[in-house]
Image (cartoon, rainbow, N blue to C red; front, side):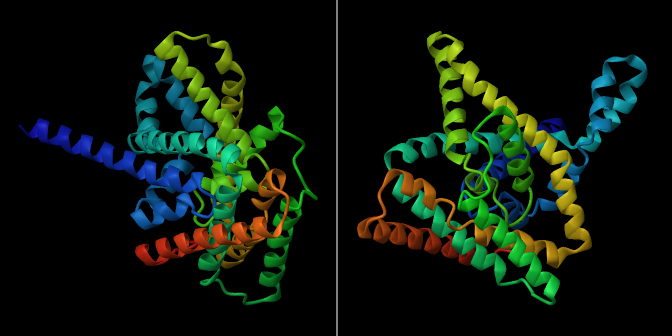
Length: 319
């Protein structure tokens, strides 16, 4: 009886963690809302950071060496330290949400780019406002950090600083930056991808890969269609793993040592990213009075949606 009860509790915990992943993945797939902020609001941010920082090359090697009888005890201990019973369902939930939203994004990007990117512009602008309210500009250093963060984002958004195309190295770099941003409160992984000009491309590649795999499984189709987008997905994942064990740690260390200064830089980076989605609108529509009016209207809708979400959850905190 007690074993059945424990099993039911474990299943409930797995389902709850999977739901957390759905919420976090949905947030990270939409620019302006951070998966890290969702983790804070739902109360599992500390466990998330502990689990991610436990992902070290040494522990992974120890787990993989568990096939040897003499090393199995150490492998079990390392496996427990990795907290996979939490990370796996959380990751599956995040992937589920990102896949679903990627399909919607790739469809809307080709059919309704103005409403989608106008809405994203409002989300980003409103998130910069909500997160910036709690910041203090206590010194010239803080002002300088704000100028550098906003200026860097504006340069990238204006295509004055850009990654060269969508080659393998670019995809790995984008994955490293986006996935590391996923666990940082205030910064959305999709915002980084929009800033780098990779959001629509990677969303369409993920959608194409999932569609090709579905055709193979359900209709016995050819695997050839999955090779191209599958390669892109693998490169992105490789970059994401690199980002988790490097960039995310660097930013977390900066937050621990110079919290307010680091937050000023991150939120300023968000503020400078506000114009980034407008390039996608300009590529699809000439900038007429009607286009500008519709963009402003959709941006206002996005801002209201984020402010409403902030009110419902009791406020966002960039920490």
